[in-house]
Image (tube, rainbow, N blue to C red):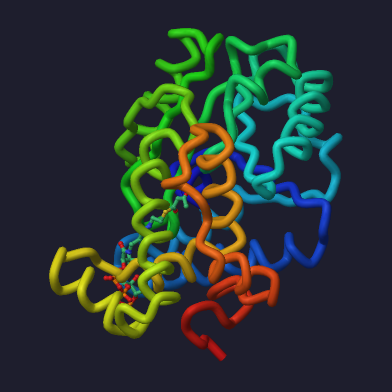
Length: 264
Ligand code: CAA
């Protein structure tokens, strides 16, 4: 959505046709909301939508300047996709990952273009959030970093560079706070509303940590905490058992209509 709004031709790829349709519907809804609010004109809304096409085949990603991968936070899945993209894309293509915490260096190592692999981490909800965290892998070149920094600015985002350590900056700092809020809930320190209100009114956060976890997805939060715990080896990152229990029960947050809060 953001690339299309800023003038790029975009091919959105998902192996699942239902997922693809859901993604397109979410983009259309968001564009309509932005037009309704006067952030974009009706012409801009239509032109942005027209720049977006879809496919269910990874093989269709061919003659492109940039790929932004955003599949589930599973290292093996990402590596499989990057190996395939590396084999089929021309040398000029930069391969970026929107990973929240997985090592860019590790993903880049399955390709023959580690200098042109980089992290481009957008924040949820992407059309509204200004930040793009740009993660340099061990072999990412200065030229690739410069291109992606400039590209992010052209999307009207603010790029910040980070080095490749587990969770980078955003989730190294955010996830321990969310995890601690879940421990507070599990131990009965306060109610979910109480915990969120303390952080909203006491610390001026736009959302409380439990509502934010629901927005991000509880499964995603758990995956990120596992990466931090394993990658940094410190027990301060151990995922709260209540988070594990909710994910096991299929309470994944907003996307499953139930997380800490009920969205039905
Ligand atoms: N597109 C267009 N409009 C959208 C939208 C979208 N995708 N999502 C929300 N909006 C709209 C809402 O519909 C609402 O419209 P109305 O005013 O007409 O009702 C408007 O934006 C503002 O929403 P709200 O008034 O409900 O709330 P708000 O002013 O507080 O803003 C928010 C919403 C920007 C989400 C704000 O609450 C916020 O900044 N929350 C924190 C988000 C955050 O921390 N994100 C990072 C998560 S971490 C991550 O993404 C990375 C990771 O690796 C886990």
